[in-house]
Length: 148
Image 1 (cartoon, helix red, strand yellow):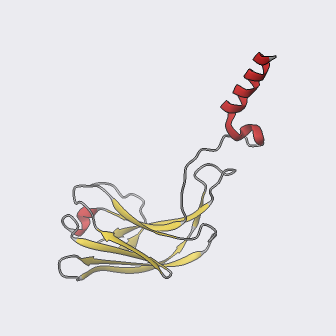
Image 2 (cartoon, rainbow, N blue to C red):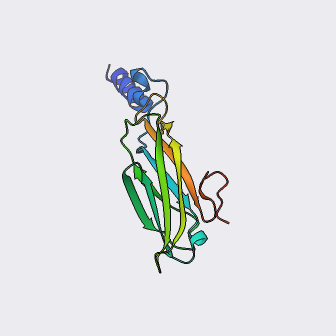
Image 3 (spheres, one colour):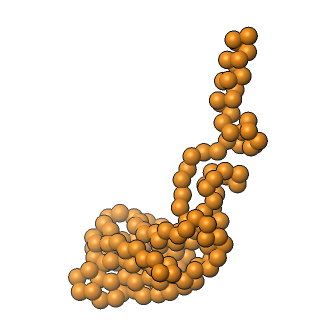
């Protein structure tokens, strides 16, 4: 009898939450809703040569452009997780750290996309959009962004 209970207990432990009505076990990846912008630090001069400011609606985040030897940098403006599939205004401003000159200024409307990092039947459900900060084109698609 102990062997049967041990076997059943082991089976439940190894199958995760699939025993409780789900086809696949949930992982524990966490994620937040938000709009992100990524860039190549080398595109904006030397190490921390610029400040990148991203605003979504009335929320803003900024950071230094980063180490020119590192392939990518980014900043995210966090949004409420229950924001849903909506469109939000996004503004980007990149200024030179040395003299405050604006080198990139752009705005777009971002349609947030549903993301479920642990699968369709597992939490969390978040809403995201991602752009690339391009030195000549402003906010663009991040597709094709390579470290070169």
